Amino acid sequence: MTLIRQFIGEVLRARRAAAGLTLRDVSSRAQVSLGYISEVERGQKEASSELLSSLATALDVPLSELLGDVSDMLKVHEADLMVNLEHEKVSLPAA
Amino acid sequence: MTLIRQFIGEVLRARRAAAGLTLRDVSSRAQVSLGYISEVERGQKEASSELLSSLATALDVPLSELLGDVSDMLKVHEADLMVNLEHEKVSLPAA
Picture 1 (cartoon, helix red, strand yellow):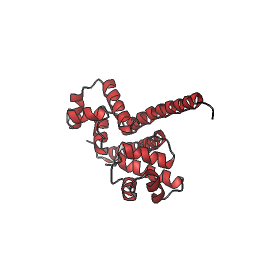
Picture 2 (picture 1 turned 90 degrees about the horizontal axis):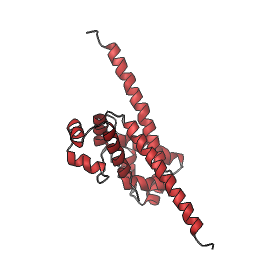
Picture 3 (picture 1 turned 90 degrees about the vertical axis):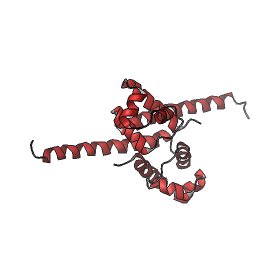
Picture 4 (picture 1 turned 45 degrees about the vertical axis):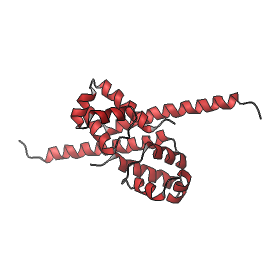
């Protein structure tokens, strides 16, 4: 199962790269430990609402855009799952 | 500061109401305690990625849609904040 925190991590990392910021930059701007941000980016830790808010400010991105990115990634993922499900149905022997 | 967990709570409650489900229904479908879901709906507890996934399944709504709702609500909220900020600027005495 792919979890939302993994998509949130990917979005945060992509937005940080797009802004040309290092983990150290974001850590210093958001006043959050570098290790914690790194774990969140790798989808290993849940980001609290407060942390997401601080990271959005540090990245200069509205929270609505971060969540919009996550929603878009989930939509693509859900569509892929549906396609795989259809393929599985097709390859099952007829009852 | 309004936090994402409050918007997530509002979205979950609205989606549950739209589906005509009680807290008890969702609790039983998602195999999560009624008290925990109630706290999440009131924005008092963070929902883990696993819980959000279970609740989306229980509500029969794709996760991407739940997050899309939250992103939309945040966008309206951010726009309101900008308007308030502009009003404050206008009402400040000229320097």
